[in-house]
Image (cartoon, rainbow, N blue to C red):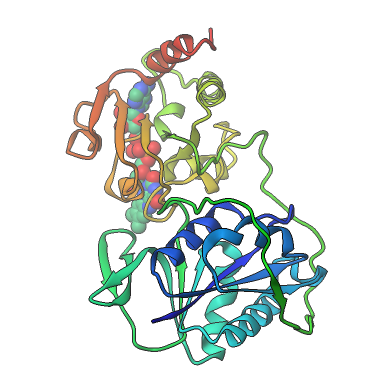
Length: 337
Ligand SMILES: Cc1cc2nc3c(=O)[nH]c(=O)nc-3n(C[C@H](O)[C@H](O)[C@H](O)COP(=O)(O)OP(=O)(O)OC[C@H]3O[C@@H](n4cnc5c(N)ncnc54)[C@H](O)[C@@H]3O)c2cc1C
């Protein structure tokens, strides 16, 4: 039976985030001999919350130095935990923190790593990882004989572990925290409000059409922004953008202030996972639509009946003026005027 280490870092509030609980559920589903390894300022509370997961051991590297995401300390902690657990398979969530540190740890242990896995399951009696290649165009299932094998699971691909709280016995693994890197603070992009919501039921995507000349011969970017923000407020949808639109914002043109490159969906943007997606004033070209791979139900609003969405890329295309449609939708949602 494979020895499995589930690796997790705690959040600033001491708990485990949803991606970690999803990776834990995947680890539990494999049915091997499970050890939990945690990194953070203090791990006892997080360990108690998942005490019922069936792990035989709970290991932790603790201390203030391990609270901050930082390559040197995260890699040292993960290496110590992997050595202490002696696991063949190490599973963790594909957070930016683990993505930065675990490839180095795999190299130190003469192991291998696979990132952006969307699933891990037993196939022909061995663990096999599913992942997408070539910017989400081809799906492959692969397995490896090399151990330790590190696997980073993409968030949003499986249900999060849930269970009752208990009392876990946590064994501390001593690690000397040495690093030349000091974390001095956090900088996030300037944005009036939070528009990227990975857990939202709906992805609302705005395209460059919102900034183009409209039937009256002039563009209406202020009205566009007002309609979009009203809709986001009422629906709590997540906001995405096409490359053309976010590039315009980056070039400092008078466009949508709520939009940054972080919102870009597509081949050179992100591939979010939401049950539904609504694309507005966006043409639906292939490099953009590639980012919709994991959107289950897709709808689009475009003035052009020959736009890309009409060619099998959307389940429903409304050939209509998005300004008029969104005005009406906002009214129905009890918001806009
Ligand atoms: C290598 C490469 C990578 C790329 N990666 C990405 C990527 O990651 N993401 C991405 O988005 N693009 C990407 N692109 C660019 C992509 O090919 C398109 O150029 C881009 O998506 C077009 O953006 P758009 O549809 O918003 O704008 P446009 O093509 O200008 O389309 C605007 C649309 O708005 C419609 N419209 C205008 N007014 C209204 C109205 N009132 N109501 C309804 N509809 C209206 C028009 O009919 C038109 O179809 C990439 C391109 C390349 C070459």
